[in-house]
Image 1 (tube, helix red, strand yellow):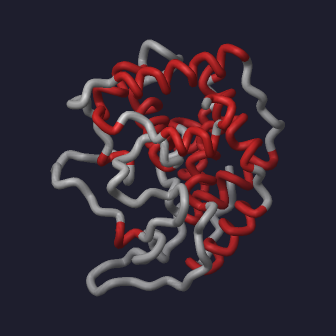
Image 2 (cartoon, rainbow, N blue to C red):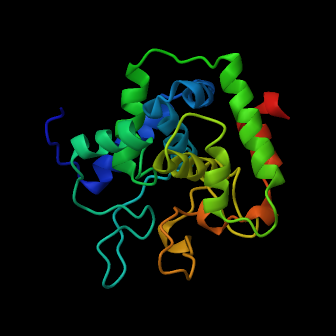
Length: 227
């Protein structure tokens, strides 16, 4: 359990940027791969936070009329309970990867853990995930992909949805016509939402469908051994 710490918006952004600068991309990708077989969702989460935050800029809280969230990062001025954030991290692999407070907590806790190295089975699972995503029909939806992945790794639907969301943050599962986080931080006011009322997938993966396959350049960026 954590003591409730009230971080201002600027303090949270500073903490996130500090945690990001202290995190090595290789350790993040290795931990992500290792999580596929071990089901250590706290290890999996770090890739989402790192992928979103590595281009995060220092900025003040700027809100639009009628909004309580920052128009750049999307975070609210008030701190979230770190115990809730950590529960989400352990239970599902994270929910709020775009929030600087979550990024800071996630990567600070990740740095305090022992390094996680992938096994041959983990690598095989990831290879299979890529192959399945490449082979989805052009009309396949995210829910179809989540169902197809159920045969590949120990998981429930909520965990697979988070996994798919993280691959979206990494720029692997995206609509190539929309901005993603791989080369720059996408401001909250540029994250166009789909018109579907019940769509609760995160940006940018929410725009993916089977016709997009996978972004091979992003795979090469994060996991060069798989190209």
